[in-house]
Amino acid sequence: MKSLIRLMTQEILLIAELKELCNAEDLYKRLLLHITNNKQSYGGKQYGMPIMQIGNFAWQYTPGQAEEKLTEWQNVLRVGGNKTVATREIIRWKKALSGIAVVNEYPRIWQDPEIGDLEGDVSDKLKPLAWLLSHELAHVIDYNCGATGGGHGKRWQRIYRIIRNAFVNNGRYQMFDTQQVIQFPKKQKKELRMDLLGLPLFDLQVA
Image (tube, rainbow, N blue to C red; front, side):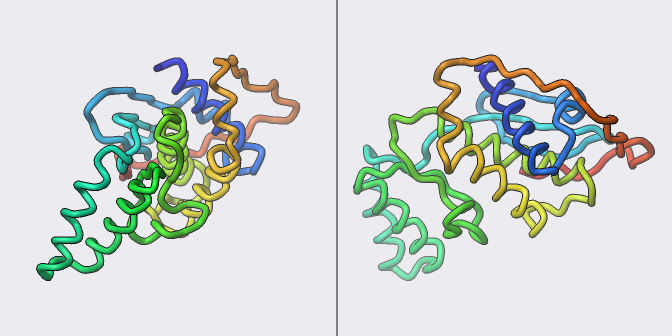
């Protein structure tokens, strides 16, 4: 799995470079990549270096548990619980009950048709990983390439939208079922100057 994550990371950064978002080879070489179980995922910058941690990834709303969870959230709504949260959860669990697996996104973008909640077939184990890497690498690029990063703000959303459309939404991630090896292309132009030297020792990292 670690080799798969590294290959997918390379591919996403290559896509980002083609979209003029970063220098793929330079960013990958400097990226501190941690792959672990049962821990939170995040991407950002630490001690002036790009960093990304990949933890658990899986469909969160699945058909097998949908009926029970849907009833629970309907009860929350019935007794006067948080209407906004309950409504959002009911919508997701209704999709799961209909056979559509879901991974939730942040409330501000969850209904965006391109970068909102991820939907798919529960048997597709690769899609949630592709989604997670796209989300976190958008943070890495946001914090390490160009202007200062801003959490889940407009710049991150723009980067994430480009990556997710080009890697997840169009099914490109499925190429990794064949375990193809990806290599960075040789540069034909002068390398872009590193912009991290002299930055503060610690900058925010974002989940």
